[in-house]
Image (tube, rainbow, N blue to C red; front, side, top):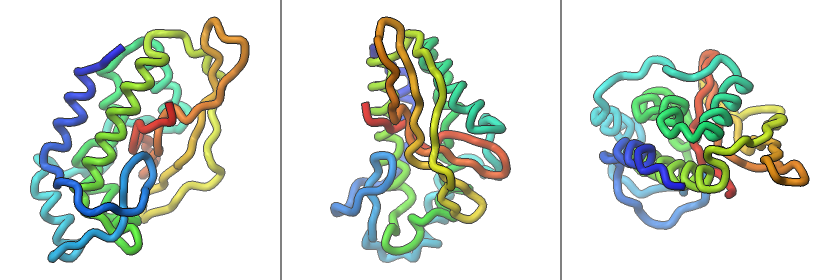
Length: 202
């Protein structure tokens, strides 16, 4: 099963991203991060990226008030094969540029990365992840029984990032439960939860 509508939407959000540079260290959720050569300080890189955004994000919009609610929403959308439901659950380009990136570890060595480059990589990883999830599980009852996340998030300014969360499912017609990385990092800021990435290990 393919979901071109969602992939087009995700790719279009990266239209102002910068082209890949030299190889760098692997970062979470399929992105590649590391020290990137630039003639500009990181503050200028952020200002230039923000200048390409049509809106200023002051808070996360369209998320959920808990991890439980956000993950249940993800599972429901996958079971219903509702491709339009995924984009509102994810951090938007403006939210990335104004809320997440300026306080993230990617503004500092050894992770320093241009915001446009990191955004493009996250978008591409999310597109692949959603495609794979739909091909494997889209439109099917998942038999979702629960999830597990690390006890402590990565604290980056006002942001809290949970990486490595798994879900346990027992799809119809299977004999045993499966524990999977079905999505990427979760971002919490000021009590609102959204997905930073839909990257997965499918």
